[in-house]
View (cartoon, each protein chain N blue to C red):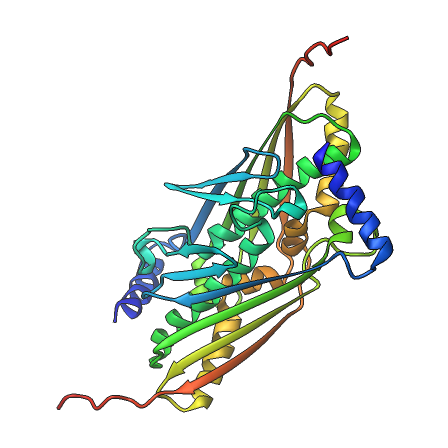
Length: 174
Length: 174
């Protein structure tokens, strides 16, 4: 079982080097159009766009859709990993994630409205031969260990820095 | 100025219909390989994979990388929208987002370690002709209104449901 082996190897590596389980991730976002962004992640480029109602061309998902995609895919993978860790057979995983927000927050029309999601619904569909109670226990383990669910549910410390390169304004035409 | 017009139109629509600024987003994630996920968002499909060290093929970013991409792209777009809203000229936006996590949380080796990011660094590079202090004010407005920064910094209520379809276990070979 491939994942069980990975978990065992990781645990063994950790015994030899306590820093072995620290992982760092980097992304570079470049605003390439009015509201189009190319995000570079290692060898991959992820396109981001807004729908026409927000000034974009609808050529790619927008940032909050990627946030939900991140949560849904993290749930699916965490189900796989924890099922294998706990020895639970799991034949299929599908995860629908819905999120609601109020654009008054983003546009600053109402300072009492948060810009991010007011609520998120996660609907998980599992298929497998075990007793349903076994999958309920699995769900509890998954929700305790899913990295992106933790990011949604709990505050993440974010440090922010801004560097400005001042450009010379071209002469305006008379 | 296209974005200013969108903001004005949205404000006008809101005056006529207070529910006009509510936006709902949906994503469907399907575990299609050991740790590979296809996420469907409207007409778009987003591929997700893990690196080989976590049982994947490294064919696409993983969920926590998408979470960082979501934050970086949201910052970039919010800089564009708020610069236009505030009448600040902004010629270029780049955003690097780094995140650190400890896999002990994900694998459940240490219950005191959170599975999500311990810390995130956002480095914004701006180019434009205005006084640097103007961009500092812009940064403050952006960080107050960026949807995905809000999702990272503050708790989001997440409801989770699981439906199980019980399959018949095939006879094991003797």
